[in-house]
Image (cartoon, rainbow, N blue to C red; front, top):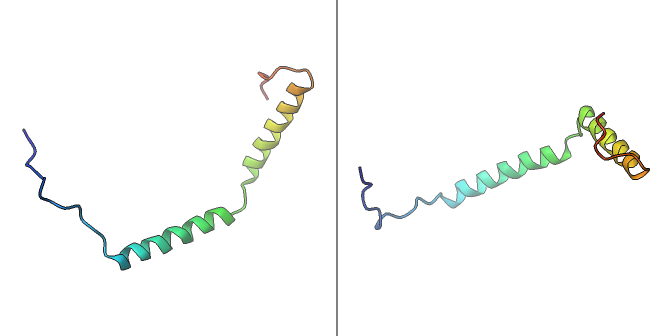
Length: 66
């Protein structure tokens, strides 16, 4: 099967008001994510990684498993 020739068709364009509304919503969601606290589990993982890197630079190997 072949697709019909779409050379004359234009891409659909959103109304500027709709684009603005979507933009505001996306910004609000992004701002919420950025201001959310970092989960404790993630902080623990970061601390473990930092400790492992310090041990590696102090003479241990960088392939240690926690």
